[in-house]
Image (cartoon, rainbow, N blue to C red; front, side, top):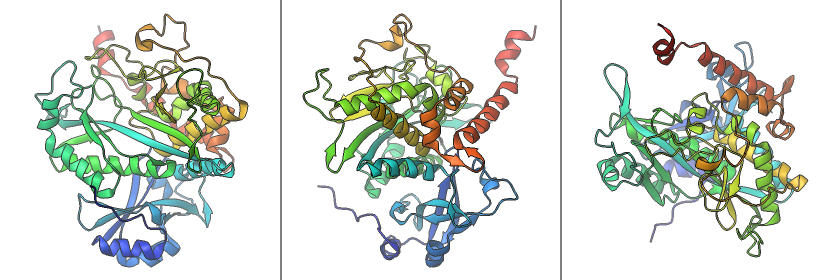
Length: 452
């Protein structure tokens, strides 16, 4: 039987006791920017009272992606006491996630606030969004010449998914991560080698949407720490190798009213045990999928995973190419794997979890509000037969997805307003510049193809 772990702190006094119990000397006072990059200062725990009452100041322009210039007032990070975790991989260290304020007001460019606001709209209806996450990543190493290769030199099979040999060769790393998740009380229930060489996934229990977003950020940080301790790199780049399957962040989503799952209906005529409300949520996701991808697949590199098709060593991408749904079928954007929940598969390993979940919540809520019917589920291998079925492909580049986002009223409203406009416009401007930087780069492929 698993030992009962202490509950998360609910107030300042409980946080202080938890810090003392865990022997924590320093706190990483953390928040994330638009790109999902964790930013932090290291604060001695003796400053806890001041930290909770006054917060900790940051130069927002230095952190990037937070809508600030060098002339703007400080961002003030106020810890959410319920987010506290110790860091088992670094004795004496704890982490608290923070909400950002400027001059005493919530800062609307902060991704955590964007998700908070979307969840508050659901709460007004008596509803709660719960989310489980399946983070994938690669273990790699960098050679002296700067090239990057899969860390395990023996991991060369064309279809290495669930390979027992690769799992045992990487036992130290996988076990370290698993023990860490268990010590945090996240209910780690499996750790496996995924479809690509050098690719791994760790699964842990679902929670309310904000808590899961926090955990995804912390998980990435911990996985990178565990890899660094072995002289390796854990990368959450969606597709680091052209010939291999990319990494996803599949999100399992359910909507609740008290202890009742609103997606569950055993009498479902379509045979998927899903309620009419659940189908409308799915309908909203499918309708808004083109713009939603700008949030769930947020990098230039993301679209090399989405559009890989069968052009990988394993002959599969495990990523959707069309806005479709079905039962226990991993070629859809939305899979219904079990009663009471759906799996959104159009999310990749680089996604900012706060923005991705906020977008999913906004799209699904719009579907419910308008009673959208997604139609009957599709069957068969859409990765192989999608084009023949006449389905509309999802955006093929980040720029295409951003343009779809700008024209999507429900997603614009879900992301909220900022000074002088809407967050969607700010987000789009950042992502357009990212795409522009990529497009201006001259690659080796171009040199090989066009030089002579």
